Image (cartoon, rainbow, N blue to C red; front, side, top):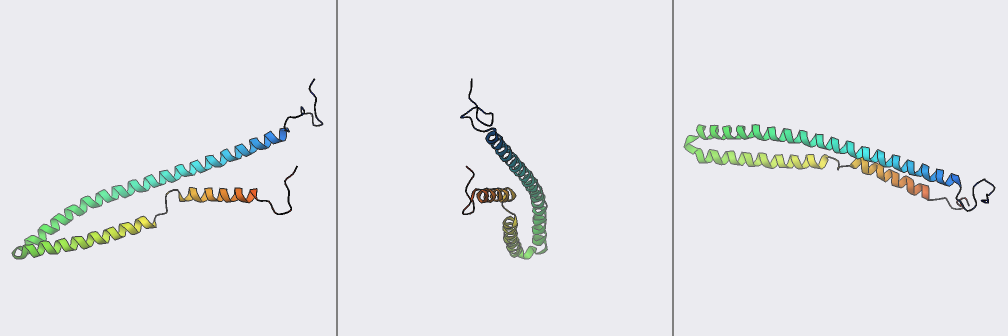
Length: 145
């Protein structure tokens, strides 16, 4: 015969409320982790779409501008046939300035974009702060026995 305590549980066994609480904490942690992984997935998908759009635009721009540069250079040389070396030099200078300006714009655009997983990191920091706040007890307050 097993001796039982006042609550009907066998003596020496942890109370049923403890297991229920632990299960509740575990379910909550799993829910939070699931939400965070969903957020990461959404951010990855958004970043992929943004990069694909940028790549398509960049390839189209390079294609169109390459032909424009080639034809413009040929036109300048044909117009200034007597001074063709000066025309080629002027075209090269203009293209170099345009390239420098485009590199500056590209750097600015890359700097404007928030870092990857910024929203996920912010949510995880909120979770961490909430857990820290929950673990700290005001002075004079003792945990239940």
